Amino acid sequence: MSVGEVLVLFVAGLAAGTMNTVVGSGSLVTFPTLLALGYPPLLANVTNNVGVLPGSFSGLTVSRQELRGQRPRLIRLAVGSLLGGTIGAVLLLLLPESVFDGVVPVLILLACALVAVQPRITAAVRRRGHPIGHGAVLLWTAVLLTGVYGGYFGAAQGVILVGVLGVFVDEAIPRLNAAKNVLAGLANLSAAVVFVLATDVAWLAALVIAVGAATGGQFGPRIGRRLPPAAYRITIVVVGVVVSVVLLLD
Image (cartoon, rainbow, N blue to C red; front, side, top):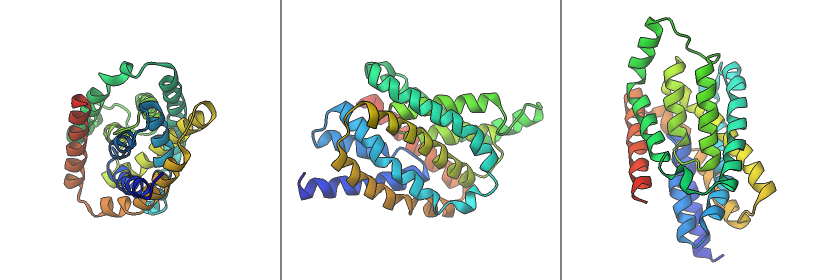
């Protein structure tokens, strides 16, 4: 690997780590970068998953304030993320890539819609007396399915998670974003274990991306903490729509 390629991958990892800890979709930077450098799609996807993983956990070191009091909820939802990430990774290795191609943009657009209208949906659910919180079966199932998606491809997994959490959990968006970072990181971790055990990883490329992502993960939560709720919501929706358009045009 040339010095130029190392620099490109580091910058891509830096951008991905920052984006993932703010709104998600960082893989839409690193994955195309790996493809542009000549890595085959499957190897690029697997290498990207392993490479961006440290960024999520790096971001947690500066999100302790937002995570305070969320441990019981996250312990319950973590099982869904870990299981979903494992299933998604297995599907990636066993199924043709075309299976999810038509579904992914729809999932992301749905997540954007959830983020946009989440306050109204939450209020309506409360008025009707339906359960909102970490014990909701629908929330756990949605986190599981998002983990499947994250293990399979992962771009905009964070956008989907914020949309889902926002409907069922009565918290400010920065706290939802911190919870999202935990759950997305766990889904990626379980998928990475499958990939390491079952297929090839371009380890040098993954290492360079990992260093960049871990560095970027230190900036993301600080940026998100300064955004007002409306700006946070608009940022998530804009990023999600852009990702959907990119995937539809690809």
